[in-house]
Length: 94
Image 1 (cartoon, rainbow, N blue to C red):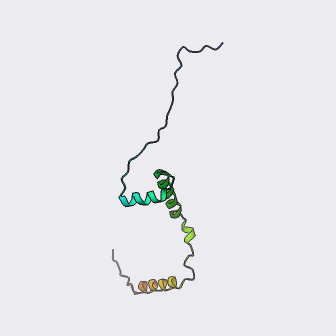
Image 2 (cartoon, rainbow, N blue to C red):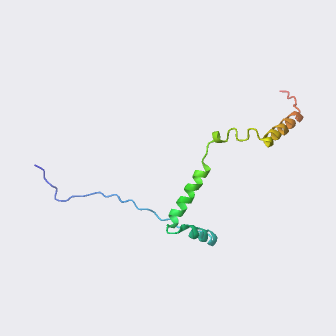
Image 3 (cartoon, helix red, strand yellow):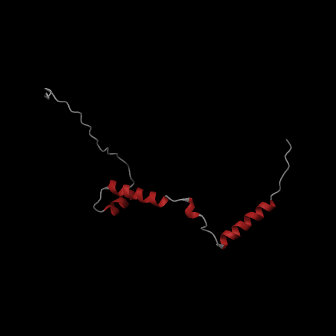
């Protein structure tokens, strides 16, 4: 037989979204207001930050060979070789 307690205590966890106050220049506020449309300012800021992260992320592997066959790069390498040839090594006595 199951006996119910006289008092039932429940523990409830409530997660509250915290609101932060930030300062914007009039120019920044105006630009955000122009692009926000029906969205909240928070949604616009999150979208802009996520967009920036996507653009910034990339792999160095993607850049491998990007200048291959480029005349500018070949000239640049020649200049580096010339400068290295001009350098004089000095002898160091320990």
